[in-house]
Amino acid sequence: MDTLTRLEQTIATRRAASPDESYVAKLHARGLEKIAQKVGEEGVETVIAALAGERQELIGEAADLLFHLLVLLGAKDVALEEVLAELDRREGMSGLAEKAARSE
Ligand SMILES: N=c1c2ncn([C@@H]3O[C@H](COP(=O)(O)OP(=O)(O)OP(=O)(O)O)[C@@H](O)[C@H]3O)c2ncn1[C@@H]1O[C@H](COP(=O)(O)O)[C@@H](O)[C@H]1O
Image (cartoon, rainbow, N blue to C red):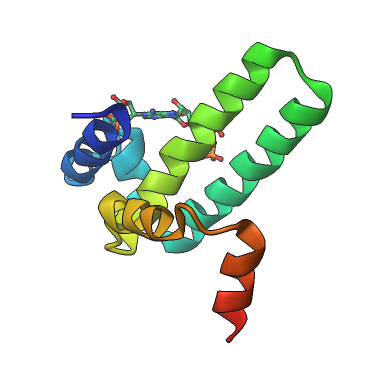
């Protein structure tokens, strides 16, 4: 099993833990808005690290972003597999053709 799929499963399990013992449970206790806000914050921190940080900072922020994105997808009942299937669907299409197909 790959890392993101394992993490998705861990997140699903930890949702039921005590918010005092689990960051995932704590985020869920704070609600969808807080989870979505964290994705936004980590996105901004990733951008800042890419533009002004060291390579290792970018790796750390990208990991935070992927983790919080998986928490958000789980909270909305969207499986990682569904996102990967969407990427698979786009594979081989040029980015410009994909954009045109989306706006049809
Ligand atoms: N990959 C991660 C992971 N990446 C980042 N983080 C946490 O994300 C938080 C981000 O820090 P911030 O300063 O942005 O957030 P904060 O200090 O809580 O402040 P707020 O904005 O939430 O108020 C830190 O507490 C990190 O520990 C993570 N927490 C958990 N995981 C994975 O999730 C698993 C389950 O974790 P628990 O739910 O804590 O058991 C772990 O075993 C890991 O595999």
